[in-house]
Image 1 (tube, rainbow, N blue to C red):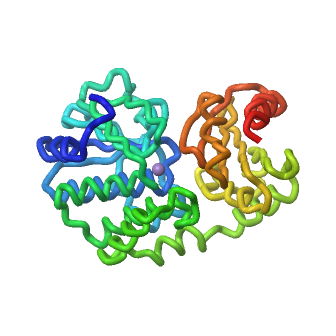
Image 2 (image 1 turned 90 degrees about the vertical axis):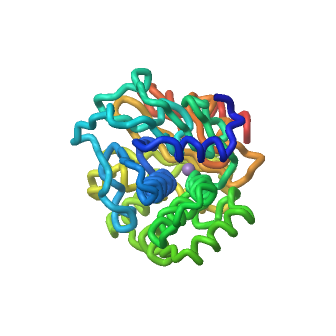
Length: 326
Ligand SMILES: [Mn+2]
């Protein structure tokens, strides 16, 4: 189906089918989880049979907000009982966190892709992609269209997604729609303070120390301080006993520096380097840089995985792209 799918068509699919399995992207963030848990619970309240698959255990900051009501890789799932697979907040098929016994090309179910990444590759049978601050905002629209009951808990899930992807209404994607959605979610009983405390005021002391160590010892400033990057290596992670899945938000320490236009955090994933980019200004698109490195994302928040053997090689490739933009 084309990009021109309407919300009514999405609603029809959710209405007409009964057995759904929800997937989201690898290394799920607040929006991936907020979208997934809101759809899971709201559709279940409509007497649909719905399950959710998340590759690994949840990041610690989210374990108090979301439940453990999902499949992860230690469970063998019988896919034959599902009619439809729903993909949320996932820009292309390579980004989907799939169980080890499932390959994307071998999926027999019908698929629907609901997302807010403008570079979404429309990989599913039905693709509903809109420009929203968070995928959770789209889920809220769909659930409202379906006249689903939005409980305080579901409102909390959606709010967690919106807060995560707008950096708590600080990023450029925050607009009047986002604020209206947030207001409605508060009226529905969303536990705003709980999300704030869990997301921003509950960092383990070891993570704060790691952040200080990283900025103090590894920060590189180039282009007159406009480009700031850090390489977070495994030694530093083990020094502070921090897991890679729990470093969400670390890049904000780099972005927060005055004068920095492009922030980059590099981590090692198996044989590759994983890059997370942030920009403060719409005219400086890190989405463009990420796409040039075979990655993707949003214009102001994007990422890529690059398979080279040394950090020097990696930075040569990165600087080729940064130099075009800065
Ligand atoms: Mn998102």
